[in-house]
Figure 1 (cartoon, rainbow, N blue to C red):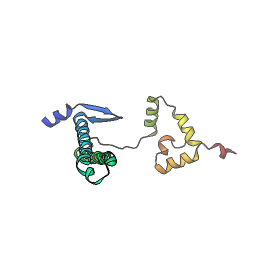
Figure 2: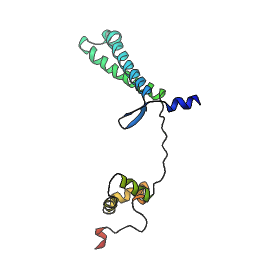
Figure 3: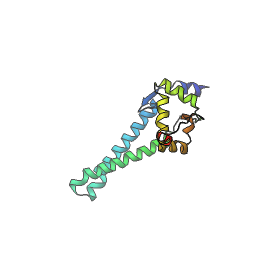
Figure 4: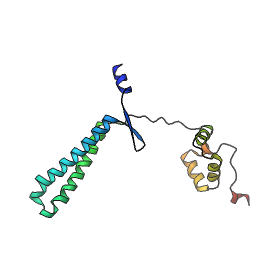
Length: 147
């Protein structure tokens, strides 16, 4: 029960359209920065002064700092797993119409553009979501086919 209360009291932050737990965001930033600096300073102070020309030490150290960033990314990937779950359900034509209405988009205009473009219609059929946009029996013939 205490674990459930702790989960519900977490503060979330929206970053680039995704919602994340604030503490985890701070830790991932700290880990990435520390790994980058460690890579840079090890390269600048320990490795490259011994093996690289003087004018290339900074450049090589920056490359090692980038490698440290990648290492930080890998560490963060293993430490902080995604917490969301995706539940995929097939949408019906009615549900899609409601969504379009809420977004103030014209569903009929969308249907017309699909019906007037055979390539788009074929791709949608192959992907399995053509029926969400075009209900059975509502299919119109393309202008080229009316001739």
